[in-house]
Length: 210
Ligand SMILES: Cc1cc2nc3c(=O)[nH]c(=O)nc-3n(C[C@H](O)[C@H](O)[C@H](O)COP(=O)(O)O)c2cc1C
Image (tube, rainbow, N blue to C red; front, side):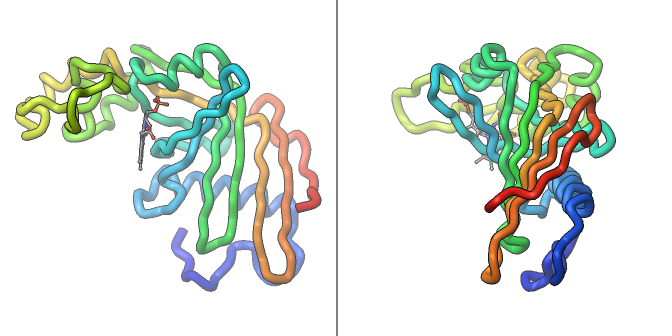
């Protein structure tokens, strides 16, 4: 989706609520497939013991038909502890050029060493595999600043075959979206809408007081 800074997806008049829902999914899909999209990165949040934890991830895949979105992470990371506890993930993306925020969330399915993982792992490049190959897990405290990579990993001095060792640490997290909110800011007034989903289908659409 390439729009100039002053062009807006939502048009001049009062937007149709169902069009908004569709465009939000198009934007998310574009985020996953277009590395240059500002929505290629998203913020995900987990909440454990009443404390929220947020972090940036790459939006890896969006299935518009089934309302599912996906990220990749390391099995050994802290967020996996959170996800095993809560089974839920909240997402946030913001496109300043469209003055549009999309928030969404739902229950998750963790894929580890399964067919979906094999499919996603097969599409990861040689270069992006190295952090799954480290001996030290994410969040290990270091004595001094360091990338945490050994010489071979730093120099990409490993074969694609050798990089298969990282597969055991590779996780695909699938979020089955059950709600989504659109928020659009404009000098003439902001707009907001909420959508809910039941069994992968849109089940309600409502305008909200911004
Ligand atoms: C631009 C950017 C993209 C990132 N993408 C990912 C990602 O796709 N998956 C991931 O696990 N961490 C990613 N990170 C790192 C996370 O934001 C986070 O710091 C890390 O995963 C540790 O989080 P945790 O301790 O909550 O598990 C990314 C960071 C940045 C700045």
